[in-house]
Each structure stands twice: as C-alpha cells, then as structure tokens.
Length: 113
Length: 116
Image (cartoon, rainbow over all chains, first blue to last red; front, side, top):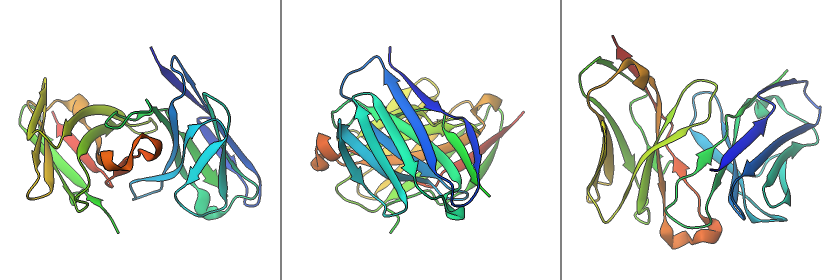
C-alpha cells in the first residue's frame, strides 16, 4: 500500500531564516506530487505541483520554491521566510490520472516569528 | 475568485441525527467532486467522491448528492457520531485539464461538531 511521509511535524523559524520541508511517497511510481498550504481561516491553497522529476508548476507567486530531485521526493524551500509564510503545509500525491483523489501527509505546522 | 464555496463555517448536530454539509461551485468545467475530512494537526482524509455523470453516491453512513444545474453538492452523514466531529472540505476538479495539470480546488471548510 502507498504511504506518504512529511516532516517535520512542527517548525518554529525566525523571519529571514531558510526553510526546507520534505515529503516522500512509498509504494507507487511516478506519482503527481503537490504542496498545499492552509492558512488560518482559509481553505487549502495549492502552491506547487509536479508530474515528474525536475518538473515543477507554480500556482501562487511567492518567496517559496519547490523541487523534485527524485521520483517520490518533493521538497518545499524558502531562502528567507516572511511572517506571512506561517501556516499548515501539506504534501499530497495522486496517481497520474484524472478523477483520482489526492492523498495527504500529516502536514507541517510552520510558525514564523 | 473562489470557485468552490462552503458558506457555512460551522455546523452543530446532535448525535444520531443527520448532518448536511453544503458546497457550491462556479466553474462549469468541474466534473469530479470530493469530500475530505480533517482532524486538527492532521492531513485531510479522502471520504467520498462523485463524478458529474451521477447525482448520488453512497458509502456507508456517507452520501454525496450532486445538482449540476444548481452547481451544488452536499454531504449527508446519517447517523452522525461524535467521531465525525472534524472540518469537512469540499473539492472539485476538471478532467479537461488533463492528467498533466490535474489538481483539486478546495473550499474553505465547514467545522462539524456532533454533540453527544
């Protein structure tokens, strides 16, 4: 069966510091991978998605970036965090077919101070 | 522009009664709809989905109804249980976007509280 791992679970970082969140998927090959953010009082906002190694599509312009160095690894990064980057970050995967549900990791609670 | 709307931020229901969560969408290209359940500090869990070729899909205590002409869907939970207390997200996607850019658009969620 497929599993998705996301870490760390919680993170407190000062403004201006770098960020690296990692996500890995097991039990499937060539998944579509996604990064979503849930900010306070808002829904789930798609940040990035990837359909293959090295392929990244950005949905929201911001100071975050994503990379997919391996088939089942997805990384969310920032060189300098802003206060507005605080939120709940979720990695998700799906089979590379339409009409298939997304399966989410347990998320990372990021607090920028 | 919010393409998927959940207008009720919260809902309280007595245990054993029916919970009805509503969702509206504006994008006519959406043809696949999903409901997710989310507990605090956890990722959303897929509950049930429905394709636009159907108007109803049932899975145990959960039933999703789709009214395409009204661009409205609802999730019914019968009977409601205290363990159902969570935030429920409605999501939608379009098969016209193709597998290469397949993504879900989510509503803001409705917090359901089932009172024992």
